Amino acid sequence: MTEGIRNDWTIDEINDIYNLPLLELVHRAATVHREYNDTGEVQVCTLLSIKTGGCSEDCAYCPQAARYNTGVDVHALMKKDEVLEYARRAKEAGSTRFCMGAAWREVRDNRDFDKVIDMVKGVNEMGMEVCCTLGMLSEGQAERLAEAGLYAYNHNLDTSSEYYNEIITTRTYDDRLRTLDNVRKAGVTVCCGGIIGLGEQHADRIKMLHTLSTLPSHPESVPINALVAIEGTPLADQPRVDIWDMVRMIATARILMPATMVRLSAG
Image (cartoon, rainbow, N blue to C red):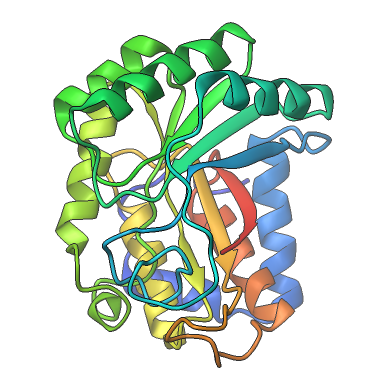
C-alpha cells in the first residue's frame, strides 16, 4: 500500500524518492499508479494554437516571443468555425480533451476574450473536455471561462522558483501561482507542470515538484515537458533531455501526486 494523498512532502523526502535506484523508483511509481488509476487508460489531448506569435514575454524557450527571430508566422485569433472544425477532427481521431492556446501574456477583457468564450462553449457542446492556456487570468475571467464550460486551465510553473528568473523576467513566479489560485476558486481543474532541459539542476526539478505536490490541492493534470530547443531562442543550443531523466521526473511526480494525470509532453 502507498502513503495516500499528501500535501506535506518535504524537500528531503522528494530528494530521496527522486534519487532512488531507477528500477526501484519505477516499481514504486507503478505500484502507486495501479492503486489510484485505471492502468488501461491513456487520455489523448489535442492542442491548437488559436493565436500564434507576437508575444511580449521573454520566455527563453519559446519561439512565439516577439523578441526572438525564430521564423514563426504571427497569426491573429482564429475564427470560431475554424477552431470548431479542428476540434471535430480531433474528436474523430480519438482525442477526448481539446486545448486552445493563445500567445498572450495575460487575458484582457476585450472582444478577443469574448470570442474565446464562444469557442469554449462550442467545444464543450461537442462533449469534449475543454482546456485553455491563455496566460495570466483574473478571478473574474476564470469565472467567465468556467461559466462557458471550461474544464481545465493550463498554466505551467516551468521550473523552480530559484531558477525561474534565468528563464523568464516578464512575469513573476507569484503571478503564476496567483493565476492557479484564481482558476481553482472558479471551480476549473488545474493543469500545471514544467519543463526540464532548460539548463536547471536536478535540485531545481525537485523543488518544482515540491511546489506542485504541496499546493492545497494537487493539480488534476501535471505535464512533464522535455525542452524542444528552437533555433533563434536563447536555449537553442541546449542538449536533448536524456530519456532516463524524463522517466525519473515522471515516476517521482506519480509517487508524489498519486491521483493526478501525469501528461507526457514536449515544449
